[in-house]
Length: 425
Image (cartoon, rainbow, N blue to C red; front, side, top):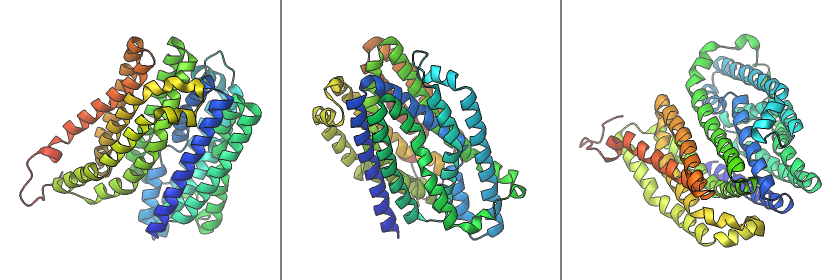
């Protein structure tokens, strides 16, 4: 079962990457760098709003269902609490976005563009997205990996087809519409999830809502929200600064290099989530923690470094394949972006210890630090070096993030450990 799930997960990620590459090429050909910048802002905003819509409950729901799946009463209380809170929060957020669509449009697109209708459509589909994600969480909690991943793959293919048709027919308008409506296409997942676990529907009751469940999930909610919102917001702020100070075309080049990063980081992030987090949750001693971190660094990071070097050496070919000749300035951005991504993975591996050991305060402080340093350094370096300053800020931010994480875990990674290796955190 684990091997099958792993194969399906690999297939899912591969399809996501291939879909992303095809969509990126379509955007480059039919819309160009200017449209790429606007699309980047909407993608980041949608990412943050979707996290708010489910109140950061996804991971907490999966953990709770896995824990209580053999306890009918506790399971009913957990599912009822998160379902109603999540659905109500998505509904409230949808109303908020709908009636403030013009204000949101002016922030993410500027007053020069009127895509208010796109924001309103996004607001209307948010509750559907929330339902889909909770269906995902339920199936994930019950370890229904096969049906979950198969439906996800079908959704990816369906989303790709809809996106290509909309871009082909409506150009930038079609691309923006596709971004906000494709999550709603996952309604199929909700329907199948409900049919697959019919007995769960009778357990979802308002009377079963428990404040204790929400308090227990509170730290996970807060961590998920900070993590999911901070970086997308700072990306929008940096992109808006690029548009205002250098030009929308240059902002499109920056979005293009970020898309390249997304493709190869999908695989490494999946590996970390599947292996590192569960493993860190199991271990309790500094010796085991040190062993796992350095084992990952020795086995995986050289391969990842090799991939990044290959990407750098073939950057001219990649720009030609992924984009168009109009995107050639992107080639100059690869060096600092790739180095920053390498530092990002180095720090991410250790940072998962915050989650595994419920070091909530440390995690939130580090995320806020990254948010601030990324914004400040990027703005300063853009003023000095122009467009390249944005990727330089990315590199500097993750270098400082890694250095600070090393400092926090210095005793665990480099300090003297008891001879029996039993010293705990």
